[in-house]
Length: 423
Image 1 (cartoon, one colour):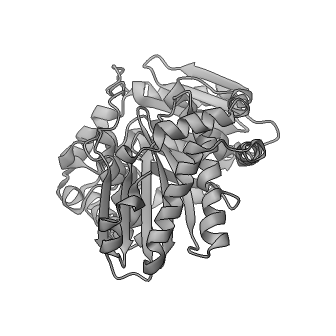
Image 2: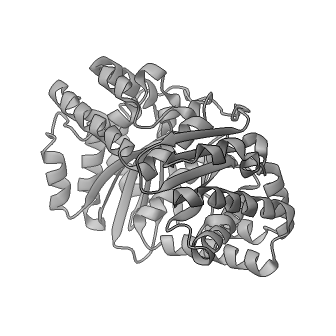
């Protein structure tokens, strides 16, 4: 049910028709994000994402949301380090109207000077809001430190200094430079007819001038920064801990094993970290691990919030569980349970057209093709206990460990007890 058409200028349109689904999700994805920015314009990709809602030659900033609301639809966007997505979701019968709104925003935004200044204030408040939210701020600190010296080290929102200084000319120049046909994937899923969408979009997108992709091919990897420990004293009720090591790129053959490994470590209520830190010892309410994967690199990150006097114990448990995955084989029943947990979540996520659309777009952005569900499930089924142990040995290294601590910090614990940060 997946069909693909490449327009003459290189824009790719991919659709997935889902029988029985009464909604359609349509997304326009641009294959570049914060990592393609220059330091002086850091945050411009996210700024543009905001500004495409601020008016076209045909629609004002007020008319855009009012029109989508009148259809009972949803219109939104998000920016990552490697892509930007503009998407809409509505009942299938409103596809022509949805396609027109989204296309008009994407191709014909006028970037009014007064709207830029108003939205600049909004983005600056967004930056302050993240800084004022400790659990988000510590992940930002981890990201900036872990990826220092790598293009992925740029914050998606930018900085107060960069956003304050970005000019209208710089915004327009960035969009013209990066929003090229070779970087664009239009994805749609749900109750969609492929040819209908081709007819609706091909003429409009033909105005884009073709050209070679501007993204680098990747492969630069993450610099070997060595072990890093950073302490940030803040007046918080908890001590927040964020630590991580290298992960894998999106297309690495070991990606299935890594997802299983992360699930066992901290991917749910039955994970080792949740059971050991929360259920057995009551040290934290929130404790988990997660993966960040990109075209050429990745990270595995562990988080917990606990009392100051218990922070050393929590870190010891985190590192102890990582070391156990490296040194001991995972039992077959635990591996099977993690595998079924992952597969179940994937299948349940496909209850909505927007999930189908996002999977479809990311598949084309990172693999250049559609990945059938059977292929993905087979990848997880092939993961063995040996694969997990070998991967943990490859990734869980002291030389790549980055530890971030925020709140009421015990410097003596983290500065003198070297064994706390030794795997």
